[in-house]
Length: 153
Image (cartoon, helix red, strand yellow):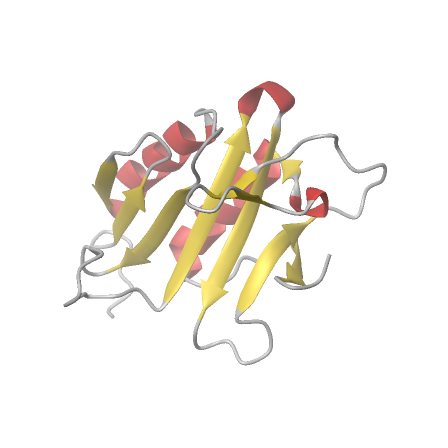
């Protein structure tokens, strides 16, 4: 991986059932904005960043880290899940909002199973955007928001 943001490719499987690939930071930022403006009711969006397009085939290539995103624009909230197979301390994490009370909102985690994010994972869309843009630049779990291990609410 050369990490050059001009050569960066973001592969997305959108909540709408469409797959998209964005090349470079400008196109990737536009894709993030499109995702954050889309209501996620029945399905999540997944994102992978790298120097190649990632496809879900038996032959790969497979991303070593991936974002799962669910957004409800009308509520101004979204939730993130980040998986990084190289992170020994927290390989799977959810965004975390320490503010209480928790929102009365279920954000879809997995459209196949119908699972939803814990309500403590709901964060403002502006924070979600900052986190995704940071990830595009660093290719690491963003530090601009709080995280909790996936199995911890």
